[in-house]
Length: 229
Image (cartoon, one colour):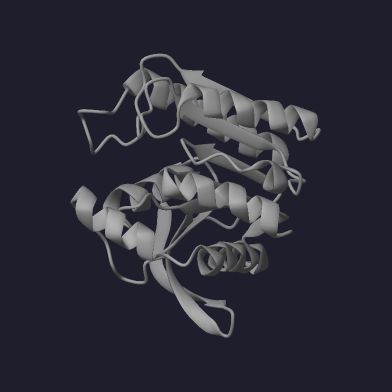
């Protein structure tokens, strides 16, 4: 599927508006929808390109700009932006993005998934725990939820992590997996051997791991096609 419609939009959120990048198939069919959640860099071209990848696979994809126009190219900048992010507001904006795409005529069935990377992965999980707007969640190397938040999950969760992630050790991932099991949450957790944090980001060749990224992408599409049908 190659013909797409893409645009920057503003969607309503808590009596205000949040900018976002909307990518969708350019046809008259109905499609499932996903919210694509940025890394700590912001709504950079890589995240827009991932939204377009989803659209080419038959999804309506909305990437909310949680930094409202700001973005970073250096880790120190990104760290400052991430530390300054109001996570409660971010979760509310992600939920609002899900509600917005659910309202679009092009979207059916009205089940919305969320997928995020790094900071966005943790936010995808938090949004799934804190709101009822999502039908499935996927975290690429997102910070695992604590026990209390795992207990709030009511949607299937796919977690995709790197064995060599310095910030999220495998032990923490396995502990998260155990809590998901205890809570009866439908889930799959995959830890990719030899993969670092951000192994999916092909704009950072020093950490990108093509085989892990491809497998994770295939698992992501399969997860959403299963649970958003």
